[in-house]
Image 1 (cartoon, rainbow, N blue to C red):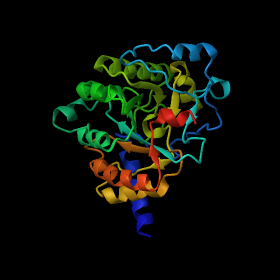
Image 2 (spheres, rainbow, N blue to C red):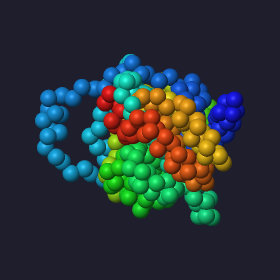
Image 3 (cartoon, rainbow, N blue to C red):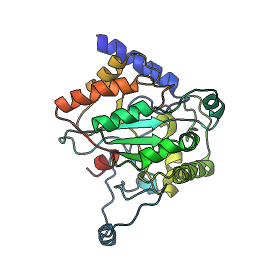
Image 4 (cartoon, rainbow, N blue to C red):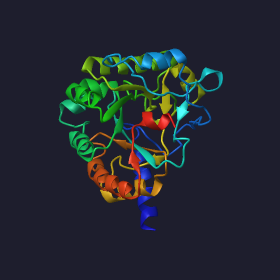
Length: 297
């Protein structure tokens, strides 16, 4: 009963946080996003396999070689939620580094949208992780974006530039139309490039988790795989790290993707929760991987 009450409270807090943080209910973003899990990873061509054997220096901000999914019906951007392989005890912890395009004054006044303690904890615990970063966050914290994006422990995925919605309504976020949405994604990759991040991958997480076919169609030119989640941590604005840890531990299954946040002001107990989650999942036989490893399964 305690877990149930905590879970409801955490999800409620998460919903309230979405105007500034990505990630709604697992598999049920506001506006009825529909995950297309039937798509299969695109098989590598012979030429791609040959070129992969010849190392090429990665370019800052350019999505690196990582498995992606084949386009969905009518060329729509594919959506990944959880690994198809359900026997391998792997789990991906993902962290949204959120900052909207208009939050500069709040950052200037001292609000912290970063969480270096969390990143340090993940390094110390040796947990490979995927950080879904907004371009605005990379601009505000370029040294951290570069440090994360050059550390082999991490990969940086695209969480838009502005953290505006790609579908409306979406937790009160301003909405972008098709052309603006495409430009927003490219602007985020450009911000990673300017910061000097190298370990970027062609994955995208919709702000608020909100999308529909129109959003998937607008994103198709970016040739990314949209990544959702199947486990909500409830860390947004949470004050009890034990409740966050319990919710994650109760939800993780083989192949799960967990959504958490890398934003101190909006998710102040995430580091402490991670320090509880990681050893317990390892005790249960789970291995931590980046999203790129899950998508290939």
